[in-house]
Image (cartoon, rainbow, N blue to C red; front, side):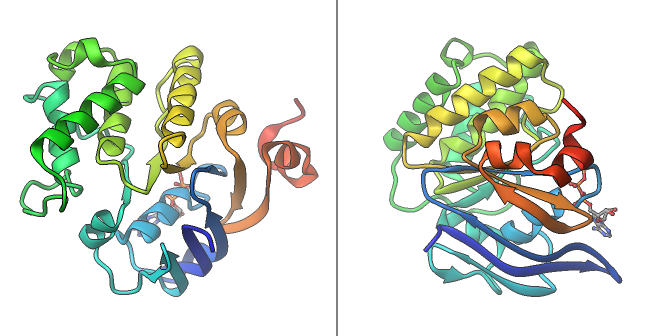
Length: 249
Ligand code: ATP
């Protein structure tokens, strides 16, 4: 059984199917990618899996639990979290405190909720934060305000913040947007390191090079439907994918 299983998942926005009949698996310790052009339904899929938008048809299970009726907060507590396209950093908190906020509260994007990750203490939260900063190569930036950092470093912080809570699966919404090629490659290396620590990742991004280079398995979305899936080599060689998304190169 996969850690995350979507079966026949559809999301209908007032007659428009943004996701249609999607079957997708994420296995523990793997990095799974989802690619597709603008408007294909990638963010909608993350929204549906994390409970930010309702599923119209189909079923999602996480760690064997049917997620129907489970709130985003509860999903986060189960170890299923996400990042957003907007960075949503706390600009008046240091980098370390940005991560601490998330490590302690899985639903970090709203301090209005008082849900604190159960079963862990302050010292463990600090260890998690130092661990995430180290993997991201941001230890020497821990006491800096986010506004004093480059866009690339700010993106790394937003990703590190999601990972600092050590969830089982993190869905990353375009983490490489706005990064140059070398920054994107560095991000990819950092993501692979997190996988070695019992984490699983799901990635959507417009940077095809990043997705093809770092993912173990890739799904291709077109007008809300999965049109191909396989290893990066299989997806790269798929004629439909080549003509639709990858060009001739
Ligand atoms: P991009 O790469 O540009 O971020 P995407 O692949 O993530 O695109 P989505 O943002 O999921 O695509 O959008 C899929 C389709 O669903 C689009 O036609 C979009 O206009 C529509 N859509 C997205 N969110 C909503 C919503 N809340 N209400 C109605 N339609 C929506």
